[in-house]
Length: 136
Image 1 (cartoon, rainbow, N blue to C red):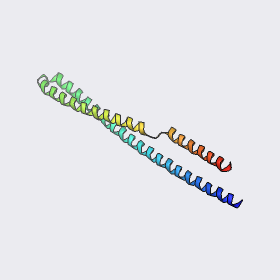
Image 2: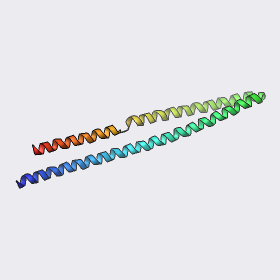
Image 3: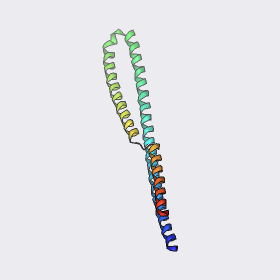
Image 4: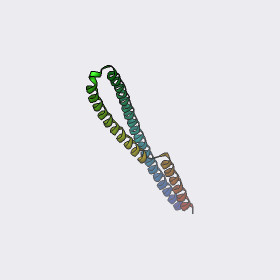
């Protein structure tokens, strides 16, 4: 009888060790999720910054339109400036598009709450199966 108790205690220790490892895995996944959240926040800040830059460029373009109306002799210079500004806008749009794709990739690769719940459920199921085996 004492041997059975020792065997059960040993198996229980194994289960506890497995649970500890699973807990460490969950902690690791949580850290990864937090890291991805920080990255996503950083990308959002970058997008906000780009939006501000785009708004500034929009204001610059409005100013250029006013100058075109009031200064006919500066028309050719303003066209060159608009071309340069449009090139900058294209560069910024490409960067924004790249950042959007990067954010989408991050979103797609992040561990979700559903994943964590699934792992938790599987751990519980395995624990029940282990207990059934032990008690069976």
